[in-house]
Length: 244
Ligand SMILES: NC(=O)c1ccc[n+]([C@@H]2O[C@H](COP(=O)([O-])OP(=O)(O)OC[C@H]3O[C@@H](n4cnc5c(N)ncnc54)[C@H](OP(=O)(O)O)[C@@H]3O)[C@@H](O)[C@H]2O)c1
Image (cartoon, rainbow, N blue to C red; front, side):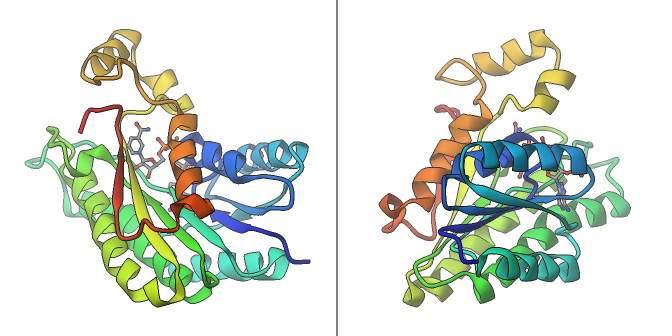
């Protein structure tokens, strides 16, 4: 059965991806809730979307593995029809001083972030329908130098460049391709692992005076994904509360 819109959100079991999947899960929509390891969390996102009147399916795929990305797009097509909206959110964070970072660190971080973005955008370029939306979640780390964040920053910046180029390639089909660049965001993981005094110190560096909530980022994505976002393409939208 065809749903409108059909949406794929990668890394949707936790954090910002979860908020985006739930935000886009309106009645009539069919949402592919991609996850890698936490099936129970993905199913709870599916349940939340269904409770709101949308439909959703959890699909396990490591998006750093191109064959698994292809399979996920096939499931979307079979379940709901080819996607109108793809939001690529999955990524790993990694902080090691450059002098200590290993070649294995490089491979892991670039596989998880740059290769996964490439694989997802390549599949999206083939499958997203005309007038569709492709949105990548970037990071303020790509523009604000921070000690220890070299591999993470470079791997996320790669995604922004893929976005700019793909936007030109898909413009004739009126598909927009953009990235959203969050600043520090208070996900469950951040709330559980970062000490309150550190959170306060981070907030002090953000002009709007607090960390983003995942819903703040989801609202920006929802705007780009809406008809109202139709004239914006090839851009990176800064959603950092004034930090950058
Ligand atoms: N939180 C922030 O302060 C912040 C700031 C700027 C940008 N961002 C960006 O926002 C996005 C979401 O971050 P977050 O903080 O919400 O992260 P999070 O809470 O760690 O959630 C990330 C999710 O992505 C999944 N994932 C990672 N690699 C994957 C892969 N190869 N295939 C499938 N799923 C994968 C993880 O699954 P597993 O549980 O299996 O690992 C996890 O569920 C990322 O792109 C990040 O770079 C975050």
